[in-house]
Amino acid sequence: MRAAPLMLAVTLALAGTAAAQNVVDGPYDIMRPDDWKVRPSTIHVHFCEPITSDGAGECAEDLVERVRARIAAVLAETESLPPLECTPS
Image 1 (cartoon, rainbow, N blue to C red):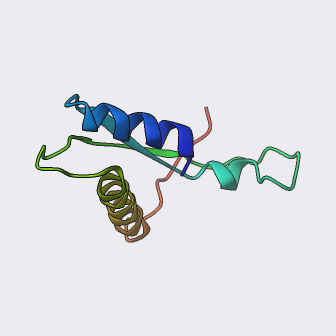
Image 2 (image 1 turned 180 degrees about the horizontal axis):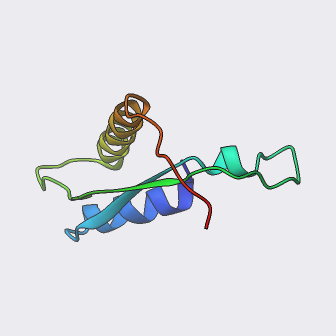
């Protein structure tokens, strides 16, 4: 999870604006941080419901925890899905 986009989303949510949340799963299978090779693989992008503050004194740490919990739930759900069959064109 990247800090800058997360903090932007939390700031927007605390200001009363809904911030879209997306989960990107799989980029490390394509290009690992310790290697320069690009490997064929699949990336899954999940579009979640926007996050908003409940407005009742919710702090940034509470929003960060909600975002992390949602990411963990999406990733746990995707692990139970069967792999997609792709045919190169």
